[in-house]
Amino acid sequence: MTNVTHSHDYPACCQPDNGSSLGTNATLKEPISADGTPVLGESYTVPARCGRAVRLKAGQVIKIVNTHGTQVCDTWLFNSEDMSEFLSMEHARAHCNSIIPKAGDALFSNRRRTIGTLLTDTSPGIHDTLMAACDLHRYTNLGVEGYHDSCADNMRLALQAIGLRSHEVPQPFNLWMNIPVKPDYTVEWLPPVSKAGDYVEIRADMDVIVVMSACPQDIVPINDLNPVEVTFSVHG
Image (cartoon, rainbow, N blue to C red; front, side, top):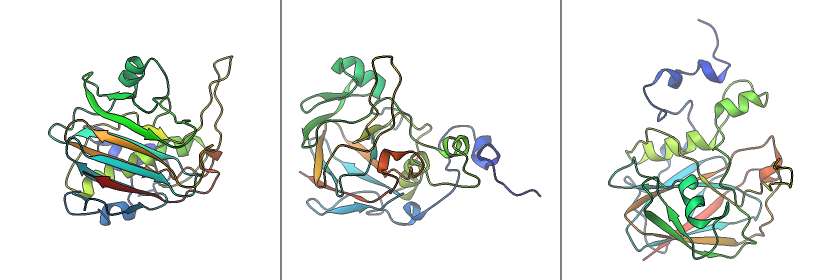
């Protein structure tokens, strides 16, 4: 048996959907609770390179804090009653008429319903809705051999940790990710412009599962080449 060194050799490539992780990390063993239900007002950590999933009831608000100011947080919202409905950035962009939502904007699902609302953003408002979650195939393309933590696997593992599964990895809302589009329509991969303590608040407009990944990207400079933790809390 040969050693598994290329991302396309990992077993999940043979699964019937995109819901299986290609490796594992502490995410799988460290859910905030057995089913993701939070203690309201309690501060939780998404450790560097890991993910967390949390349940919100309609009307509850999640506050996600860029603790150090340098960390990208890939963020997903799923309808907790039907995981096939989720925050869809391509649908949200069409609704907002912008590639970056701003405070007050509704966040649309893939069924063109409001799944959440971006209530507050204390940062300069630079986020990304264009780039797919990093995955093992991305790191293989960047020259990594063997397994590398990824936002795609963090999403899968965070859901698995609370007994859930998504059949796909939707385009995330990449909080604080700085991907400017230049006049010639090329893009750059730059560090965040947020500062330590900047936060966003998102209201759930239906019962949702919010999944966050403290992005493990350490090859291009979107996390200042040093992935660190973010924190979050849920309020009624």
